[in-house]
Image (tube, rainbow, N blue to C red; front, side, top):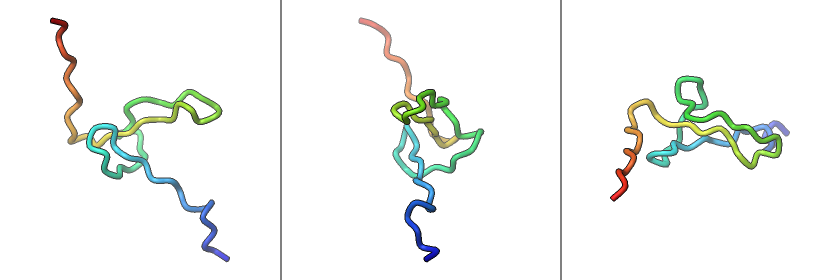
Length: 57
């Protein structure tokens, strides 16, 4: 009975490329701030480029 699905951690996905990413402080983009989990922490690969802000027209 060691195959309890609740014991397996849910994978995190990169906010830029949507590939699985390790939960680590170095990969943290934004710390979650909701007790209900509605605003979870966001992670990204260090090698993924952050999106550029568009200049207003």
